[in-house]
Image 1 (cartoon, rainbow, N blue to C red):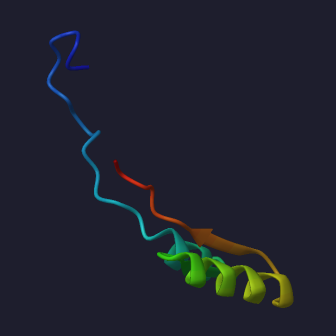
Image 2: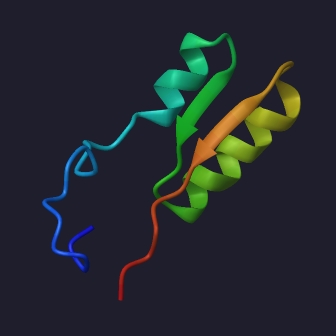
Length: 61
């Protein structure tokens, strides 16, 4: 949009809490912000019935 000279509209949205959304739909959702937290989230996901959504933050350089 900006490259065409248009005013950006409806594209600067706040981040979505995906784990909360997964829980709202009856699944399980967790945020893993460390390797240890990811290992624990995977362990729990594999032993919990139903879908599990695990978010992992991007590494910024």
